[in-house]
Image (tube, rainbow, N blue to C red; front, side):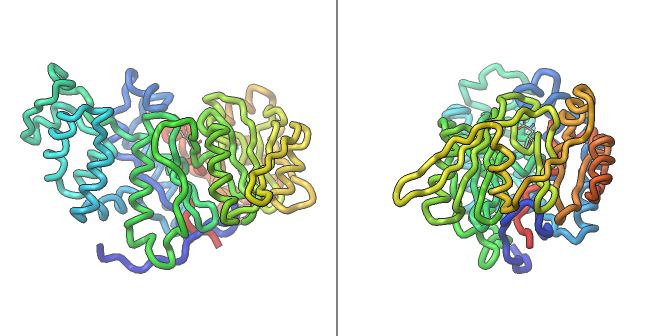
Length: 410
Ligand SMILES: NC(=O)NCCC[C@H](N)C(=O)O
């Protein structure tokens, strides 16, 4: 891996100048989305690959034009699997006998161990079918795959890698590796964990101080779209369709134990697909302002702090939500930016990721162009909005914040 040394890393809030970001340009995995697979793969439609790739390229060129260094997840992963020991660890952990069966794991392992790094990454992210394995010369002995048709997916694709926000999140100089709620996304976290642990881009000065988070499908789930640095000392976490209360308590315990943050604010979101993560309904746009979905009811929050050896949680009634958020941001009062839309228009723009903006700097954000009314309103409020077409990408239900994992802000 002949790579230049990486700059210092860390994310201490949501808005300071964005320096480095990890993204994933969608690839062959999108072609596995069909009317029959899309729901389990957490997409609302089948996507047009070429258009999605072109729109993603527009997104990354906007970022580069702003001076942001863009790291491509698939490139980093290909560097890792070029190293035999790391390839072996990734295969061992990605090919789970409890999911695939022991004989299928043997069949797959033998075939995948031979592939070029780039081809292997295409398989790890794009999945592989019975027919494709046979084309590699594998004679399948798995009982679980006996009689399976050529199009049967032996290893599932990971089309949600597009949303790099979710499988990991930087909290200051700590990385939370997500325990994802749905099986369709669990292998994504393994890739991120391996990249942070082993890639030279995250070594030395650029290494996370530590990784927190857990593998597996227990009750303690946390996804990055729910994780929001209000300030360097206060973390907000949505308790959502994806992130559980148990997950928040465990994350808070980890972070508060060594003073990585002083307070964790848990926000009790409704459990709905349209607002699966905190960042689908609200995002921070400058030091004192949050863009917010208008019809969102005030929500109950919990402020978690450490008192000696114990964790202390204080429930705050819904009508105190803005005061709790203001305290987290460290400002006297919160400026809530809610586009003046009727209930229909507000719901439609929120569904199309209108509230999911990515801050490049205080008061300067990237948004999808189709959130036209929200963007116009933000401009009227003095926020600079850079737009790009994301209608094809948005069919996976994620916007610019979901498609980016900041790894360094000033
Ligand atoms: N932070 C986000 O809201 N990410 C969007 C994730 C969309 C993806 N299709 C999912 O359902 O997990």
